[in-house]
Each structure stands twice: as C-alpha cells, then as structure tokens.
Figure 1 (cartoon, rainbow, N blue to C red):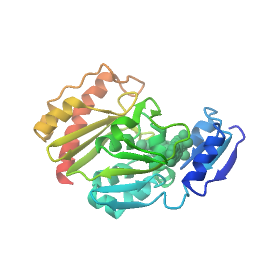
Figure 2 (cartoon, rainbow, N blue to C red):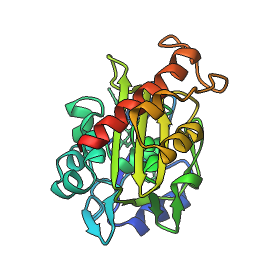
Figure 3 (cartoon, rainbow, N blue to C red):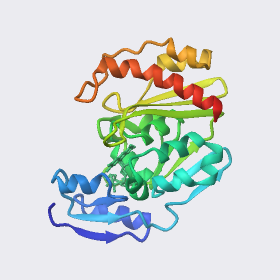
Figure 4 (cartoon, helix red, strand yellow):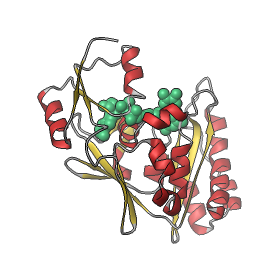
Length: 266
Ligand SMILES: Cc1cc2nc3c(=O)[nH]c(=O)nc-3n(C[C@H](O)[C@H](O)[C@H](O)COP(=O)(O)OP(=O)(O)OC[C@H]3O[C@@H](n4cnc5c(N)ncnc54)[C@H](O)[C@@H]3O)c2cc1C
C-alpha cells in the first residue's frame, strides 16, 4: 500500500469540494473494496475522504411509495431495518446475504454501487426494482446508472447520497453464490409491479443487466413454470474459472423460477 492522507468530511458538499480540488483523492465508505485495491496497489489515492460518517447519510426512511436508503447505510443496517424488512423483504434478505459479518458491518450501499463489481448483489436490487440513485447533483434512473465493467454514470467527483427504492408488489433475489467470497456466480432479482415484471441479473456478464426474455414471459404469466421455459443466450455471458457461459445461461432461468416461488411466499 502506498502512503495516503485521511480526512473525514463534515458534509456532502465538503466531500465533493475535496475531490474537485484534488482529482487523485477518493471517497472512502466501508473500505471493503477500496482498501483491498490499495493493498494490492491497484489504487493509490492521494487522500481518502471518509464519507461514511456524514450526518444523516446512513438514514433509512419511508417516503410515500418508496424506501429511501442513505448511501452510507451498512449492509447489516439494511438487512435489519424493520421498514425494509416489512416493505421490501427481498432487499433486506439480499443485504443480509452479502459477504460475511465483517463485510456487512462495514460495507455500504453507496460504496457497493459506485464500485459496481460485476458479481455484486446491490446492482441487481437497484436495477431489478427500478430504483433511483441520488447524488449530490442529480437523480439517476437505474436503467442509466450501470455502464459496464466497474463503470457507472458517476462523474469522478460525484457522491451518491441515497437510493430511492419503489416498493414492489412482490420481489425476491436468489443467488448461486461463490462459496469462498459469497459474491454471485449468478444472482437474479425478480420484481413485480402490477402487471410489469423486471428481472435483473448479476454475476453473469461484465455488468448487471435486465433479462428481456424473462421479463416478457413473467409479465405474461408470473409463475415459476414460465421462468423455467425461457432459454437465455450464452453469447454475451462470462466464462471464467468458476463457470462457463453456458452454465451461467442455464442458471439464470433456474434462479428466476426460484425467485418467483420465493416472491410468492414473501
Ligand atoms: C470478502 C468479501 C465478500 C464480499 N461479498 C459480497 C457479496 O456477496 N455481494 C456483494 O454485493 N458484495 C460483496 N462484497 C463487496 C462489499 O459489498 C463491499 O462492501 C462493497 O463492494 C463496497 O462498499 P464499501 O462501502 O466498502 O466501499 P469502499 O470500498 O469504501 O469504496 C468502493 C468504491 O466506491 C467509492 N465510493 C464509496 N462511497 C461512495 C459514495 N457514497 N459515492 C460515490 N462513490 C463512493 C469509493 O471511492 C471506491 O471507489 C464483498 C467484499 C468482500 C471483501
């Protein structure tokens, strides 16, 4: 790890001003991805600007038909929050299934989204539930947020302050996890809003994506059987030491079917 400075931001404005003044500075939230990258010398920020303790930025609240989760909310906070558990149990369960206790005690939703690991769970929740990412300067629809491998619509000095999740009629997230890291080998979020169904897949490609064939099948017939009948093209999917593209393509409808079953029980 290279030497770096550490500062704690008093508020979002101060944090952003610090990065505007120094393009080599970086926000630090839970450190679960950034510190590992620094230890491996894959990242060498001049200054870490701690945004995890900005007052109010870890708040979780209900606002009409949405749940608003502050960017600094830890995975464990989301998993245990009574409002999230009651209104979007799929989101609480997803957060409770991330990594291990230490990762959940430190990692934040804002850090997970900014990092946009291709096998991360939160991107599937944000895209599957059609959430809105709120930053210090704008609101970004989930469909416009994820751009590619570790790439989002964020500007280098843009701070995520919160995420607004619409409350679905039914939803569930099922992942086939890597037993070592708990990251998703494939993870599928299914969410039903009336007759519209959104299906987001993580772990299978360079970035999270919506699976149109499953969305069409489930919008017509919200059943596990309909999900199982969908064939997913392996063409754009990843092959690595954990699984082939064909295996991942096979898993997607299988996990979607399990998610539909779980959503029915939720
Ligand atoms: C062993 C292990 C297992 C894991 N398993 C899983 C898993 O099963 N599923 C899963 O989804 N994830 C998993 N993770 C990743 C985990 O969720 C991380 O917490 C997350 O990726 C990063 O969040 P963080 O708060 O620690 O961010 P940090 O590491 O502090 O920051 C990550 C990046 O986000 C930027 N950033 C941080 N906050 C903001 C903000 N508010 N606005 C803009 N940019 C910001 C930072 O500058 C940095 O570039 C795992 C991690 C580990 C170490």
